[in-house]
Length: 112
Image 1: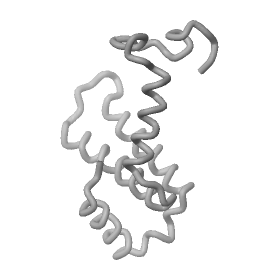
Image 2: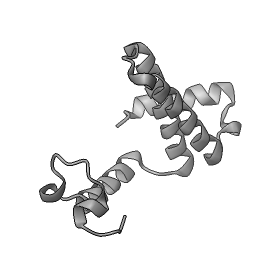
Image 3: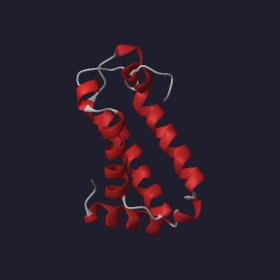
Image 4: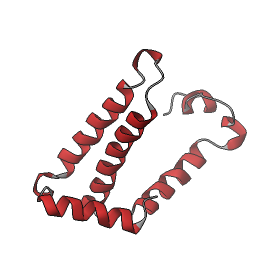
């Protein structure tokens, strides 16, 4: 998870540039998707991308995710741990270890 210092630095960066006015939840969600697509593009056609470029695009995705969490007033640690617990229940080790099967395939039904 990001350190408080990282989040404070990110917040100061945005404040210095008066960019918060553009950071609606909708715009931040769009930016996450756009930056994630740029990250994915580095792997297009099975190529081995430059590590520095991957890190830059990953940083962009994370930055927008952190900003959205801040804008929504959610605790990043809390939402990640809550989601992990739901996923732990949905994909128990005894059914999912070493498997790429989706929920319905693991549980033998059409639920998802």
